[in-house]
Length: 320
Image (cartoon, rainbow, N blue to C red; front, side, top):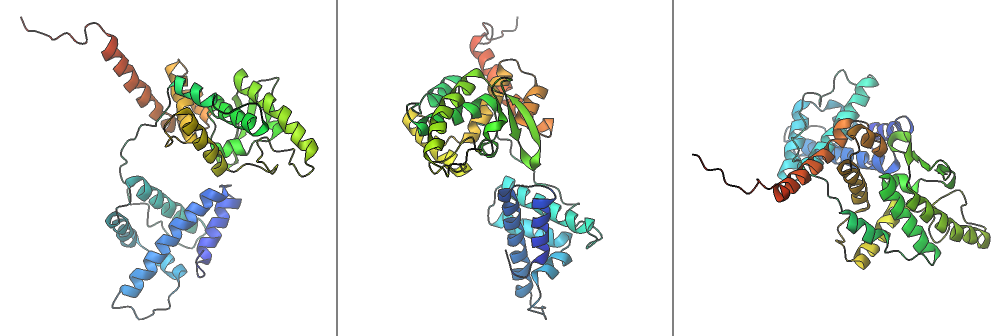
């Protein structure tokens, strides 16, 4: 964090301790704001009319107006930032200045009149069920790390939870009798997700190995569900590395991410008749519009199947 940006430090603290943002998300907000602050400093120093070269970043952040924000957007465009990245940075600035208005440090939000760049619609990538099966069956189950990895992949596909939610799970979060799992989502929001018998069996198999590890290692964190080889909570990066290994072993595209299992879960649920509202709740989406992206996937799939299967689709109409 830049030395002379007390305001930024206070904002990051607000995100973490009042809004309950994760460390990773708060760090991303901080990086966006630091870039903006550096842009302001560079612009100030490059201005031939500048008389005070020692002005602080805090001062420039508070003095920024609509024109300044537009200049920053143009700066990002010149450097060929994607529309989605630009939109994220603009959202960061909007939140930051809303925070300053709320604290009484500014009378109005200079970002409020700036429209977010229109996004190119990207349909989420998903795996066919046969590909999911191939991936889930790849980790070996005759050792504790393989059993753990099989259980992790099964849970991701069975529940549609995020990887950050997966690594946050504790053993007590799994209700084997009720066949549900307690998930802590974004912004400390909690939800209950049904979990399938296949995933539960994989967890139980892994726990047998896990319990033996706990007995042999006094330093093993017995609270954590998915632990690394040192007995500590796994990181999201570790889950990604494990999945990369199994994708290659299964002969699947290594560009697939753990989040693709979440997309696959949602797409397969809708394809098999689940209603949109239920899928929204299962995914932990705050807005139904976020979940609606999956209807575009299922609709395009349905059209493709229609074109391939309908007997009249290939018939050319001839006017009489």
